[in-house]
Length: 94
Image 1: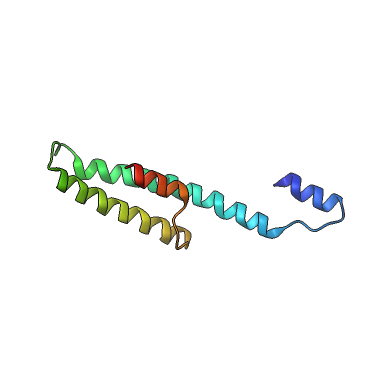
Image 2: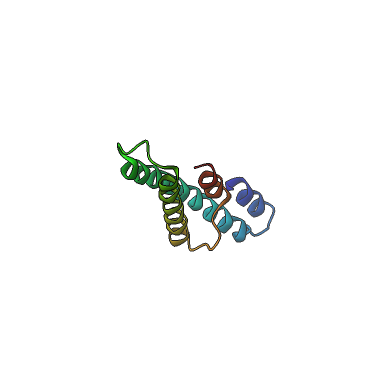
């Protein structure tokens, strides 16, 4: 990003602020996804505790609630209506 800025300035141009804003948003989304993953894992440990084994239906109910909470946490933290690919991949694998 710095190189693009310097090249634009050195060549008499103006740096593209939209690229910068996109980069900032993507970086922030990655940080939030990491936090959402940690929260999801902590909540999963707390919900399951020493309650395994448990019926598959009950486990699926817990996972569905946690996935929904993770999506809401991401959306509320990023103000994006669509979750990132990283978050979708994580939630579909869990």
